[in-house]
Length: 149
Image (cartoon, rainbow, N blue to C red; front, side, top):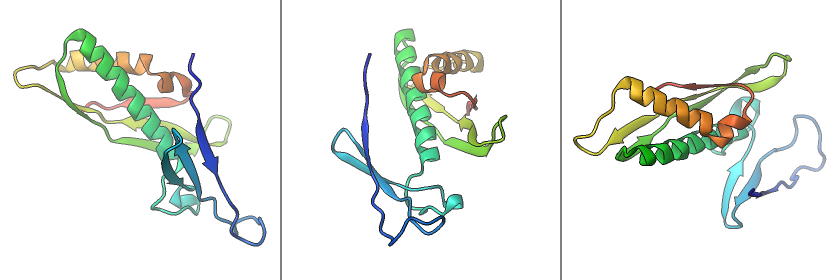
């Protein structure tokens, strides 16, 4: 199958690497062209204007779920006009007592071309199928909640 890669670069700016006295801010490069500044979540001392790994995980899940949903909708002949999601990663302790992303909530809003509609049961089934077929969802061990709006 595919091998997909990123490049990550961090450089210490402080005189020494000491607990709580260094920046974790770093750069992640995608496709050798697009760079994203990443740091720890603000609650863990990171810069609030940087992306954090937990957001990146929620983004990966949301994007994968959407692309899977769109592929399934296209096969079903559903004329999707727009798709919007608000994804939220929740941090807490897992069953082993370790800090973890314990749950990711997706809140997809799907709009169709004028004159087309599906009922709530059809939407729930298609969203469930998208979740079951999503590569990222199949990778995660903890809970993913899909809250259809």
